[in-house]
Length: 354
Image (cartoon, rainbow, N blue to C red; front, side):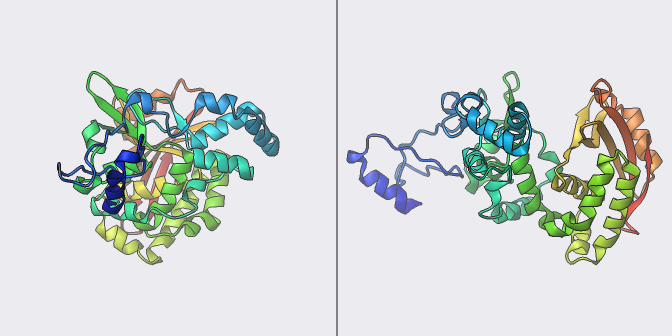
C-alpha cells in the first residue's frame, strides 16, 4: 500500500478531501512514513452510518423494493422487512451507532429477487480461518464477547489474537457498550455472516466440507426438529457422528483439540448454523453457562454436553444451575436435554430429554 499512499501525498496540493476505506487498520509507523496525516474516524459516532443503509432509509426509501420482494415470497411487507433485517442488518461501528444494513448484499437481493448469502459468493475467508487456527480461537465465544476498544481496534500487524481481524473484516460487530466499565459487546452481525462464516469454519474445525453436512443428514435432522422430535434428531446426529472418523481430516482434528467437550460443541454448533437454526453457545445465566441454547419457532432447547460422562450428569447440571429458568416466561415450550459423547465410539452415547 506504500505505493498508493506515496501518490496520495505527492498530489496533496490538488486534493481538497481524501476518504480512504478498506478492511484492516494499519499503523502510521513514524513521522517519516509515507502518509502520516490521517484522521481515523472508524469509531466516531457521527460517522457511524456513513457506509451502510440505516433502518430509516431501509423502511422509507426502499419500501417499494420490500413490497416487491414480499409479493415474490408470498408474505406481507412487514414479514419481509423482518426477514431482510435478520439476514442483512446488524452492523454497528461505534459506541453510539444506528444499525446499518450491508448495502452490497441488500441491493443484490432486491436486484435478483432472492434472499441469499451474497457477501461470500466471490471468495472464502481463507486467510482469516488460518489466523483463527494459528491463534487457537474458540469459535463458541464469538456469539458474545465483552472487550475494550484496544482489544479489537488495533493494527492487525501487531495483533496477538484473531479478534482485530474478525472485527475489521466484518465477521464481528459492536452490539452494545457499557459506559461505566467502558466495555464493548461484540457479536456476529446477522444470519448472512453466520452462515457464510460457518461454511468456512466447517472444513477447518471439524474436517468436513459443507456438502457433506447438508446432503442427506441435514434434511432428516431439520425435519425431526420441525416435528419437535429431539429424540429422532439426536438419533440422526448419533448416526452422523458415528461415520465421521472415516472421513479425511477428522481423526487429526480430534487428536489436536485440547478440549473434547469443546470439539463436540463446535461440531454441533456449526451443524445447527448450517441448517439455519438459531443456536447460542456458552450462554450465561445466574447459575453459570449453558453449553447450547437452540431457539425454534415453537420450542427452546437447552442442551448440556458431557464427554465420557453420563447424560444424567448433564441433565442434573441443567437443573441445579437453572440454565432453563430464563426462558420459562418466553411463551415457547422449553425442552432440556443432557447429551453424552464417547471418545471410544466417537459419537453420542446417550441422552436424556425433559
